[in-house]
Image (cartoon, rainbow, N blue to C red; front, side):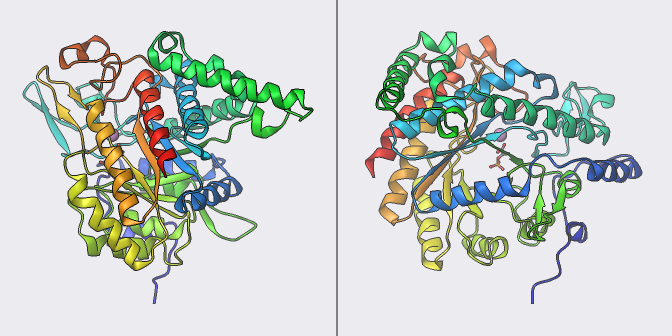
Length: 447
Ligand code: PEP
Ligand code: CO
């Protein structure tokens, strides 16, 4: 018999990757404060996303999930949010127009503020300090004060997630994301690049199609053209924060984690007897789970059964992150075994986290060709196993950063220092993101 679930039942299980909050009372009080504040999203929106993901499970839609590795409080500004949104919209237009499928747009945004780390502490200039765990926990500056986990940061994170959500809703619903403005999403920097010009050409074709609709008398003042549906997601790491935003839907009586539409469980916190899995088995959001090359196949089977006991399509997305060199060894068997079990899954490819390396200059980076190679293998393996390549998951930004090598501008290791801004993992810049979208669209069209 399944054990009783409540939004606090995770507390009886081991929760990995939680900060060591110095003041436990302050932590509990902050969770209580957040639990009285309004939810960030509504159950109805979450159900809409789940229905769309159910289409992706069958190959009739494609998931595009992307954003920063870690959002930073100081980057919660309209221009920064708008630039990232624009690139995601551009990628979605490329992939749906050239790839021929509806694209479900999900940002790693409005709450991606907590990070798992490989160690609790790190040595900086001979001093042992708590690791930086994301702006919702502590600050990046290497001082004992800055690194002290502070529950007030959870509250600040909630407010900044609200502000982000608010401007995202304004941009996507208020005309900015209208397909009639598809040209204007090209930023100045990208506009001059070959990718930008290719994008311009595609935008002109869309303009012509909309104009043609108008000429033949079709009303183009419709939400399908002048609004974009956009969803939010983050790694659900800080269970106190997630618990505080978990609410019971008055129409269905079901529980939803209203901190975002979709949440995912990271590679480091997906233990079948752990607190994260306990928490997420009880909420009705679409859930993602990261799966890396060291997974145990029986564990993954158990995990899928626990998180999706009714085998509901759209509920569960397996986000594989093997790395270009390991995917051919690991994914075929995983896909085959899941298919044998009859599991209804969205298969998504995170080609970022298995391809990180440290360049000689000391910067952590990822190479464009390796990222693309993992994506290509992901498609080919699913085609040959008879499973469906249903989505992609990126760390990316709208800024003109030099964090990942390669791509049209041929960023080399020694260029990384030019504009390396991330506090965490290296992100694709806007131009690299568009280039990937064009190549993915080709793969989407192949089958
Ligand atoms: C991430 O998505 O930023 C992350 C930490 O990924 P993973 O859990 O796959 O390592
Ligand atoms: Co990351």
